[in-house]
Image (cartoon, rainbow, N blue to C red; front, side, top):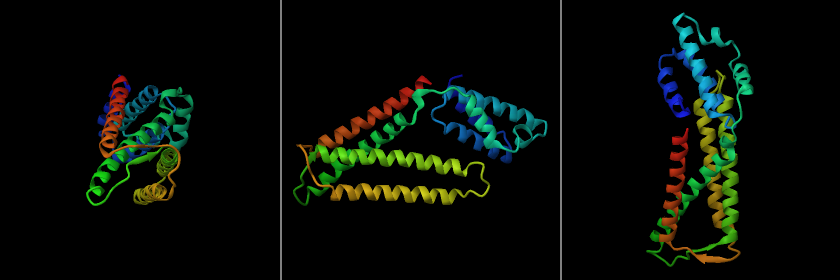
Length: 226
């Protein structure tokens, strides 16, 4: 089966696990899937083998601890060391997808905001190239750090009985609010410099929609190829 089919089958079979076994296996599953440099196909095949082994053991009255041991993180690391790498799952393309999706929404929102504000006063719809490049670089860095922060938070909560999902959600929410605040502040205080061109509201919305469609289509194609 392809990776997508394996994921769907895994989701279906996990419903047969006891709550304790599901927690143990679920942590290992997330931990392995977060390793974006690994071959997705090979990772899902190994995860399915582990799940089948666990389900067979569960029928015999065994727990995940009996089958995989008392160190699930160590066991998962051993599996990761033996899985092949896959360059196309590197973090950079993933981050670029997130950034482009974010930029598409910003362009659409910009167009709507210009339309609304222009009803009350004149609005300068010029775009300064260098200022925009600084903004894009900041967003790219912010998203990259955000992905790292979220992944690190998730990994820290795995295999940790004292972890609090609410606290992790609050931490991620605070980080998101701070990042958004910094983006807004940057748009307010960064000076306009460099060459400029007129970018009216309609062009902004059309560009944003087109970019969103491209990102969405590429994601669908990627899923279909798996």
